[in-house]
Structures are given as C-alpha cells and as structure tokens.
Amino acid sequence: MKTPVAKARGKLVSRRAVFLGLVISITVLPIFWTILASFNIKPVDASSSAAWLVLPSFDQYLEVGVAEPHFANELVTGTALSAVTTLLVNDPKSGQFLP
Image (cartoon, rainbow, N blue to C red):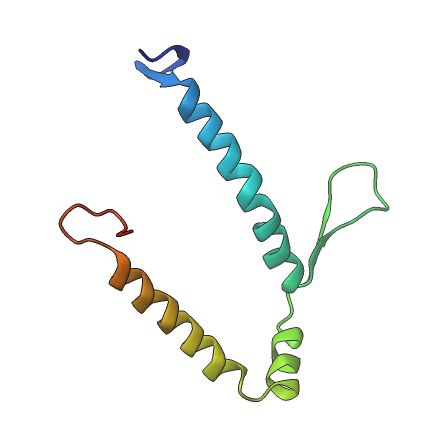
C-alpha cells in the first residue's frame, strides 16, 4: 500500500519517489558543482545576493593534455571497458544484472 505525500497534476507521489528524488539530487549536486568549477564558473562570495562569476575557460583542459599526453586514449579505453563490462553482465531478456 502506497501512502500519498502530495498530489501533483492528478497523480499521487509516493514517499519512495520523494525520497529517491531527494537522494538523486544530493548525489548529483557535487558532480554538477565540480563540472561548473572545472569550467571556472564559481560563486561570488563578496556580494550579499546570489551571484556567479561566469568566465568559462577551457585552459585547465588544455593543461591536462600537455601534462598527460595520453589522457584522451586512457579516457576512451576506460569508458569502452566499462561499457563492455556493463553489457556483458546485463541480461538482455530481463534487463537485470547477472549475479
């Protein structure tokens, strides 16, 4: 039995959906913050209102290419390996992971 928490557009939202939405938001927020920081987009601490310093720059990424010349190859290899591993342990009939 699902307990309704809120009613949105005629649909009931269960406690589980609210909890999962909260957990996903908390999980994704630091990753999003890190991506913004990598592009040099940072909050401004000097003002009393919420403000962002938006001067996107890819200089850090160019420095990674100079400091680690094989970074692109390592990134592609790691991504391909993880994708193939995921496909190998996934059961196509049921859509669930194999033990």
